[in-house]
Image (cartoon, rainbow, N blue to C red; front, side):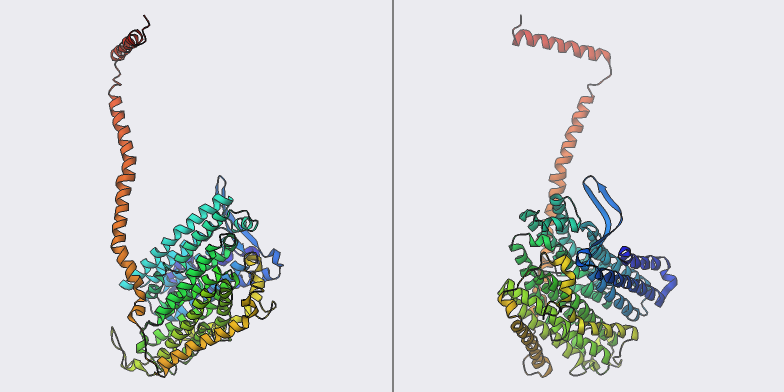
Length: 637
């Protein structure tokens, strides 16, 4: 199976091509089932490759499948090749697995949409691009997938482009990550200049052999981190992700849970040997940005009223946790949280979509309430996702978040405190959401949306094609923690599986206070989660404490407005100045030099008359001048 790893991205690509050619004839729901089947088939192949790798020894779990020689230019040799190893196949498993469930869910969610086939066309193209990203054997192939998911995110977020908010959000999601992409490109240049290759295996081998100069390794790591900040929505480039909620809910689940936003974390783990060889301040920068982003986004989520925006800011916060893990040297914990996050966040987004669908497109949580009785399956599965993200044991989110906090404490106690406060806020705002949506009074009875009254329309449970993915994801969100339990080496299955990729750079905290007292930290994490839940129950459930939702948090600390004001004011003036300098100074110097040469040539051309007598006269004058010079100046005679 390992030799046909190319089938994993090829199958969604085939689905894209078939729907592109025959989508209109297939129509609804056949186009949706075709796209789902292609993504499901890619999952089956991923399982086969996983089992094949699992049967091999750890030293043999790296296999390169070359498709063709892409760029044989001088010393630059880049192959279109795929790297099948524990990290890439782990990514493939949950990208295709969760992606298949989202495809299936979309069949019910997009029912009746006039562009039903086109939606699944984009979904399959997105899956193909993401699989190219994670399977790429070198930085350039990954960059192709990196840009591919960026383009597809524009198509999907702006899918309902007749809505101004969706069209604007699509452009924002396309442009903002481009700000970070220059860092990725510079990292490729630095890596090739230092190592002579863009291959992950080649670069990492040189790093592991201590063949990289520290300053170069730091430059590569920091440039990659800039790219990761754009794609994985970290400060200061997170602003595109909350607005991405304007797209259909399955898009939110696909982008925010298992695919595009995790690309930056994946890239940093893939290049972890380079980060390991960099100066010590580089991982600290990554951990600090991650911790601050996690806390910053959590405070904003606590004051949002749109059911999807709460989850969007929650995604930014959880991604911050993953970068905190990367900066703390906990690469296995970063991937562990990425996996559990894929399950519970996909569940929460799809659950919110089920609520929106049942509430006739209402997204304001202030107009919901008491929906658990009318939407029991949606409520039950959503509650599982809530307990997982809140960090309540034994649900999966507790185990992955606890491991990150353990390494964060060993790295820097202040960062640990920030992570712990974020955990309390996460439990708080997610409990707030559950109470506002599924408990309390039925506020939807008197609610009115912008299209008119819908109080007479009873909320209803969703179709089976939407509920089945919720049930499967709820099960995974509940039990996924078993892949990395912290009790002993035998229960750390994920760590042993990822060892060929992470063993060199994974930080060893054995013998530290944090590791010796990990059960104390575990109890503290449980108390933090339960405290956040209890506080939210007092405020929103029992109404014993005053609701505090400051406008500054509801408006996201006014960060987005500040960026918009700068870009539309001083930023635009600065860009206009740069454009003027480019046109008049840079281009002016080039064009001026060309003009001088042209004018000189025109003047010289006038001397070339083609008349022999003129040339003879010029020769005669020249002879006379030379004679005069020798006689008068040199005094020859």
